[in-house]
Image (cartoon, rainbow, N blue to C red; front, side, top):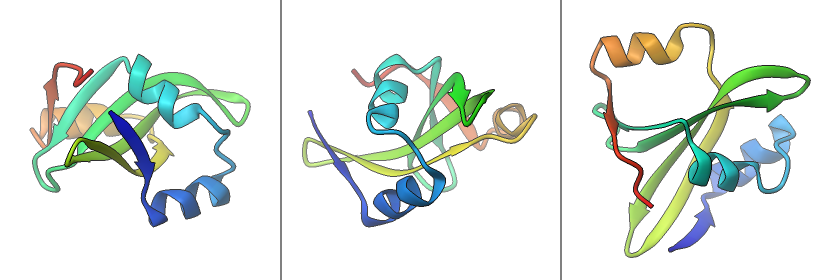
Length: 97
């Protein structure tokens, strides 16, 4: 599949100092994948080092016409993943690879 950056992703990548290749690593090596029931986006989560600290990183993406469109990437706050899973906003899915 072809991976493309949305305009929003490109801006956020620059602002947050996200290294080249990090998004692709999160997508291909995610600890878990979810479907966001409020936005219909997919979320890949991976625990990794970012800006000198170990944290869960969430990559939001969509799939369209054989393309993976990366929407945004950000560190999750403590308990954020658990809260979204518990509230059923995020529903765990199998990897889309």
